[in-house]
View 1 (tube, helix red, strand yellow):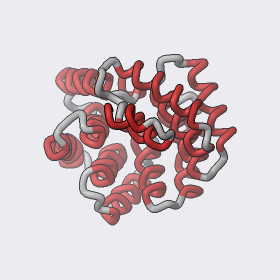
View 2 (cartoon, rainbow, N blue to C red; view 1 turned 30 degrees about the horizontal axis):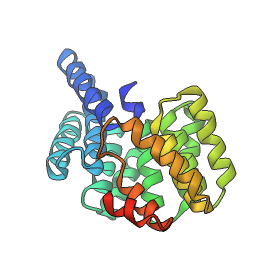
View 3 (cartoon, rainbow, N blue to C red; view 1 turned 120 degrees about the vertical axis):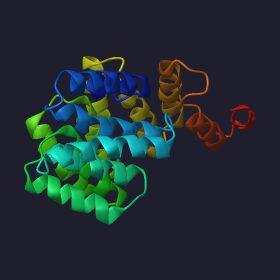
View 4 (tube, rainbow, N blue to C red; view 1 turned 135 degrees about the vertical axis):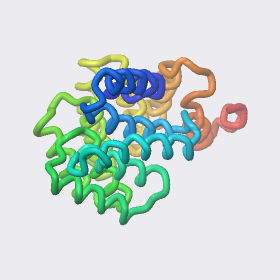
Amino acid sequence: YFHNKFTPPDAFRAIELFNKANELDPDFYLPLSNLAGEYAFLGSMGAMDAHSAYEQGMRAAQTVLAREDSYAEAYASIALMHLFYDWDWEAVRSNLEKAERVGASDTNFFISGYMFYGSQREFHEALQFLNRGLAQDPLNPMLLVLHAQGLMYLGVYEQSLQTCRDLLVKIPEYRAAVELQGFIYMAMGDLEKSLERFLTYQAMTGGPLKGISVLGYLYGVMGQIDKAEEI
């Protein structure tokens, strides 16, 4: 639940629960494997020191592989760590292939594959990865918002916006969808709607300095230099 909310506070809560699950059942490897994904997310978002996040995430995934070297989710998590931390594309690809060979089917695998191919600007391949995930879990909010992002990169703006709208009907507080709407409207050239979405997103973060960098950029593009400089 907290993992799928896709915000730093919820990721920290997910880490607490994954650690507790690991204490209760050390032979159940999924919580440890998922820790790597949470640390990758927090490090990439600046919510944790990137080096510390990478070390803790890699330690968790490698602990799993030391016990069970065919555990697909651990390879997917390692791929995610390399993707966000050191941009080691070969390590990302290698770990995704290892995860695939041993039957990967978890969310981290599909997210890692999408982000890897997206980072290489291979957006059709990226969406193919997500479509495989959505075929298994069609209501997963992270997969849905990333699918909408991929459509945005391909210029399919209306479908991308509709995916966000549908998601927000189900989960009104899902701020990743609100943020993405801001980027979609920006790409469409509708700066007023983009500004409204980013202001809503910033208010949803609960902190005065969170989510403001894009507002500074947007105010600059709109010619509101005083507001941009204030930010």
